[in-house]
Image: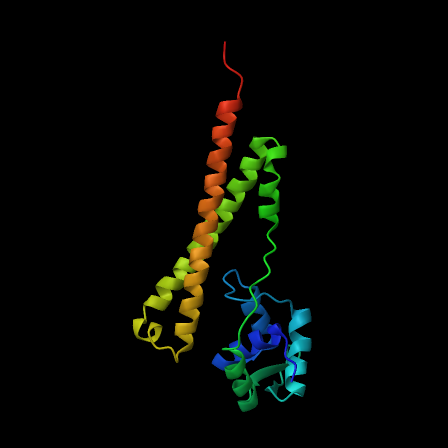
Length: 193
């Protein structure tokens, strides 16, 4: 049974709670999307494939002022497959970070616009870090679930720790680059007579 990584991401969300395709898309596009981003144009066909494989079912809900909606639920087969998949080995991630490529080319550019670029990204990652810290405070309000590896809250918390570290480190790196560029500008500026 061929299931895509997006399919497993959807199964992971549906293992916690039943959702509509719209809700799944909203979760995956939120500013604090924990593990996978996807567009609605990807989600709905994937839900259809999962349904045809018997991994999810849906309940059709008639709405009067809106189009009818489907509420998706993971099946027992979907849970069983997700349990197997969750512990299978994973290839190292392929990293594609355009800012890193730009950093590699900084030796060719004027330091001032480069500083602005890295200041922008520092602020972006600090803002993401702040959002994650708010989620962390909310999760830590129920500490008993954080230590229960059978709880979805435990899973969300361990992923959150990884995301906190990533955003913190990225912001620190951007700040460090800005400082290095400032030092370079001081050393390379012409002497004042």
